[in-house]
Every structure is written in structure tokens, then in C-alpha cells.
Length: 143
Image (cartoon, rainbow, N blue to C red):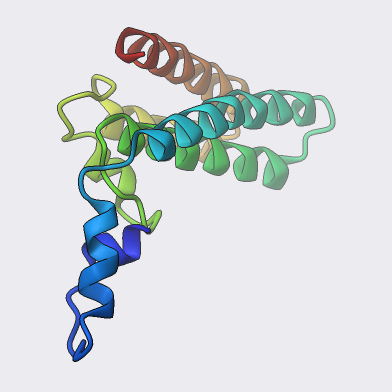
């Protein structure tokens, strides 16, 4: 749906894309609700899976869980702000500028990666937990 909403058709002689675009604005409430439900759950799920992997020292898995948690935070912020999310690249930087966002999001995400790079995975996961709590509070004020 996001691709349709954001695309600039080069050729649409039968107005098929133009017709599809009408269903993308305003941002559908049911889509917003579904994305918030799915990705809020997945933020915490990803963090918890990373925490489980700490005992065995599986840094690649921990990094993957951190990446997934941050991607899901982006998804939630896009949905919360009724914006279409079509790519993870640059999404958190963009989400950090939304009206409804987490304070210091870009710097805090960078701190998560710095901690992982320094093998301080417990700190990274603790930072992710703080982001998840703030995100949850933000979502709860909107619903």
C-alpha cells in the first residue's frame, strides 16, 4: 500500500494507479491499528530474544535482534504518525523527525550499535528496553 501511496507513475493511461492511490489517503485506521499491534509486540519479542542469547554469547544473533527491534520501532512510529513505511534504510532518521516520536531516537539508536560494537550487549539491550518503554507510552497516549 505504501508503494502505491508514494509512487509517481510514469505511465498510467487507464488511471489504474491513480484509482488505487485514492484508497491510500487518508491513512487507513485499520492499517494503523494492525501495524501498531503487530510491531509493538515484535519490538519487545526481539529484545527478549536478544537477552536470551546473551548467556551463550551469540553476538550475531543479538545484533540481529537489535536490528529487528529498531526496525519495528520505526514501523510503529510510521504507523503512529500515519506515514507509509516502505524501506528500512533511513527510516529511523526519518521517524526521529516525526511529530510523535521518541526523544533523541537517532542518537539513541546509534548508541545501541556502538554498545554492540564494543561487545557491551547488555547495555545495548537495556537501551532498547528503554526505547520500547517510551514507545509503548507514546502509543498508549494515542489510542
